Image (cartoon, rainbow, N blue to C red; front, side, top):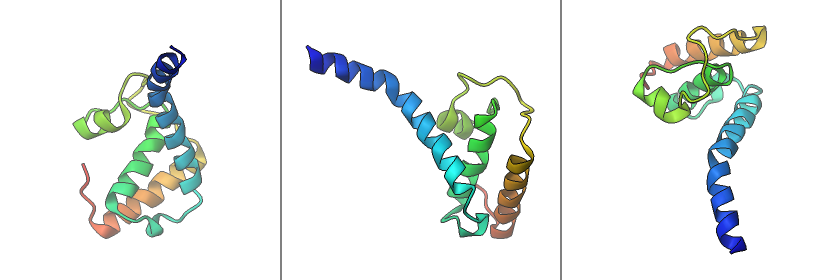
Length: 102
């Protein structure tokens, strides 16, 4: 019985833990230069994780599948100056590489 309850609890918390882990990943990768990202997907994910952390409502199917819109509240999130600089660096690297993730 305890195992069933724990299993259900783990299932209920899994999306929350994934979001928490993504937030932690976003915070940690901000310390790494955009040019060192492994792939265009990594750049896309980090950039959009910043937007998701600030309540962005995604309109593309990839954005919705990856981040969901259950807790979004805006199409124009207010980013901190640090986040704004990071997004600009990521976009510049995406342009330099010719990335077309979405």
